[in-house]
Image (cartoon, rainbow, N blue to C red):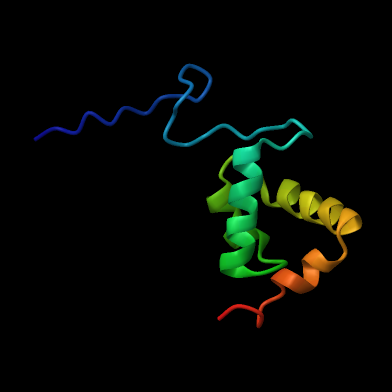
Length: 86
C-alpha cells in the first residue's frame, strides 16, 4: 500500500505533523502543560529532552521560559530537580 503521508510546509496547513515554532513570548496553556510534563519526566535543565514534548518551542525558548518561571516561583527548580521522582 502507498503511504498518503505528504510533506506539507507548516505555513500551508494548521495541523502539520511537525508543528511550527511559536515565537510569541506568551506561552499557550497546552505548551505550559507539556513543559511541566517534560519537567516531570526528565527534570530541570533537560531542555533538549523536553523540547520534543513541548514541540512548538526551541530549547532556548524552553530554557528562557524555565528561568522566568523560577523567578516567579523559586521552588520550581528544586521541585523538578532529578532525584525527586523516580
